[in-house]
Structure formats: C-alpha cells, structure tokens
Length: 295
Ligand SMILES: [Zn+2]
Image (cartoon, rainbow, N blue to C red; front, side):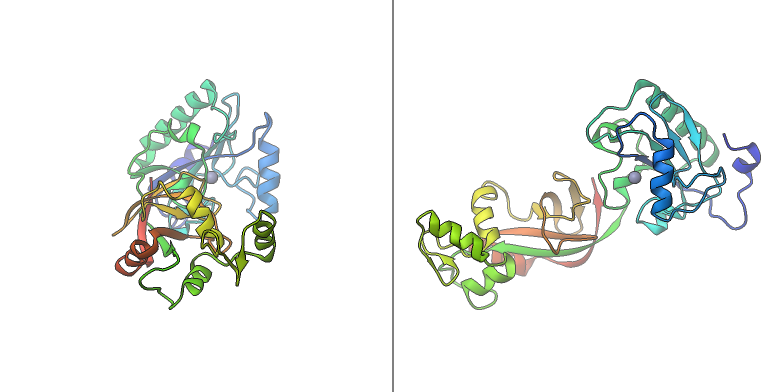
C-alpha cells in the first residue's frame, strides 16, 4: 500500500485526480505482475515509485491481492486520452474479461480499492478504459460490474460515410456507378473477379454482370447489410470490438460491425444505405470532426 504521506500530499503541481479508470490486463495467466511490468517496460512506460514499470497504479491479482505499482501522485499514460490520463488514477484487474469472469476475490478487492480511493478523491467519474479511448478494455464481463459514474465521456471522432451504389441509379456522387463503387467500396480484386468467373458468372470491366456488383462492400453489403438500418452501422478501428455502440452528435447511435484498411485511430465510417437513399443520407448528414460517447 502507498504510505499515507503519498496519499495525502501529491507532489508538485500534479492535478487532483477527477477520474478513476478501470482496466483489465487482457492476459489469462495466473501470475501477471511480472508479465505486465515487462510488457509495459518494453512499451516504454517509466518505472513507478515502487520499482515496476506497470502503468496502472494498482493491479488486482487473480487471488484478490492488491499490488501497488505507482504513487497516487503519478499520472501515468495508460490510455490514449492524455487529458484523462493527466487527471486519473488507474486500476487494473488481472484477466481477460472479454472471455473470462473476474473472481469473487478480485471483485471484493476492486470494491475495496474503489471505496478507499473515492473516499479520498470523491471522483467525478468512474469509467472503464473503453469509455475514454478506443479499446475493448476492461472487457464486458468486468465492465458490467464496475460502479460506473458519469461514464459518458465526450470524445472526438473523425466521421466519414459510405454507401452501397446500385446499377442504374438516377444519380451518382462521382458521376458513374463504377466511380462511386470504387470510392465507397473499392473495386473487386483480380483474384475475386477470377473467382466469380470460375463460378460461371459473367465479368466485364470489373463488374459482375449477373448481379451488377463491382466492389467488395457492395457484395458484402448485399449479404450482410440488407436487414440493417442505414446510418446505424459503421466500420470502426480494430480497437473497437464488433458490437461497440457509439453515440455521435447529430447522427445518433451507430454500432461497429465492420473493419476497413483505412479505418484507424478515431475514425468511424458510417454506412448510409443502398442506392439513392444512401446517396441522399451522405449529402444530408454531417461528417468530419464530431463529438460522441462510447456506450
Ligand atoms: Zn486498459
């Protein structure tokens, strides 16, 4: 445990922590402390006040042991949200709670740590890592057991939109079906086209003549998006697990259901629909830098 002095006398001008961030280690092993310290050292995290490089202030082991790694006056960068890091205490629970359940002992220790820290700092927010930056941390099986407080943290997203053009539309954004497919979906690769041909389909000029599809997302959309509502599904970076819901200003709630090569960082690419409806939704909706919260 940190000494009382470390609790009550933050060094220098360190900001009073306003947020408590809960993490998991995403490792299923029993022994974790060394593994996490080594892994964080290799990622460049500095050595904490207690001689380990683990980013989190404390790590709660599988058996409920609470291991302190940093003085509470430290503000380690355990998330990609600098503003939050600079005003947070960060606690991790050992395990991968996207798959396994936290143990009873871990939950008891977590409650103890949260109650103790909250009695000192009276946190404005108690959040999971995923509430403040793109991550699956701390996993749904732990997330639903955290006493969250004001966890809808406003984040900034770079929002783009794409639609699924269909042949013979009244109008195309870029003048032609093929051009719109190319920009929204990417055209089929030669390999994909050869496969269609081997299946007996007629291919001409990059377009599968039988169903009129020309690009990857048109084909994927035809299969998977048909039953979904435009403007409610999106391609998200890999840090957002499939199924993550994001509430965006002026747009509403979108669910991450897809990936994309160019979808990285804080980018969210919303699917606006098929044909003219999709085109109209692109024109009438807002993109660019929008604020939103991860639900
Ligand atoms: Zn985390």
